[in-house]
Image 1: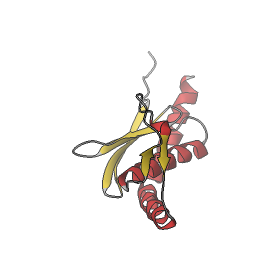
Image 2: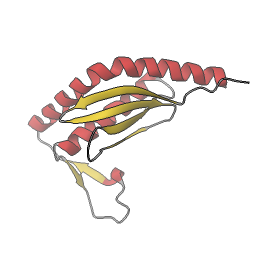
Image 3: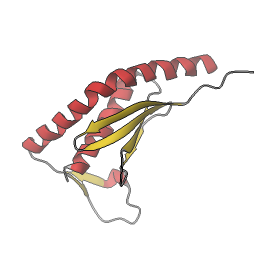
Image 4: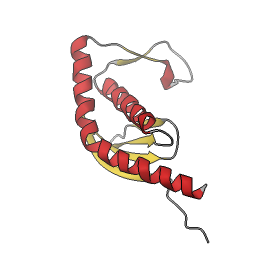
Length: 129
């Protein structure tokens, strides 16, 4: 009987600005985050494929979460579906610098763990077929 391989790896819980996120790597393409009312939110990062894609996914989600925290993310127009893709980011250079600083501090401890998960999950994926 073949050994079942995990499709998701918990990396840990990390500070992102004034928020905390428990970060997971999975064998998907893309990523998402959610903010909890109490306790840390979650961030799911797809690591299928090239390492550069995984970096782009976590950078995208972390930057969007910080923009939300700093009140820089707005709905571009009212819509019933409330699709998060319909948002607009508005910031001056100082707020951009603040967002980048917060994301940078978040990425330093996360990236080594994400790299390990990327390697492990993609190796398991190649083996299982």
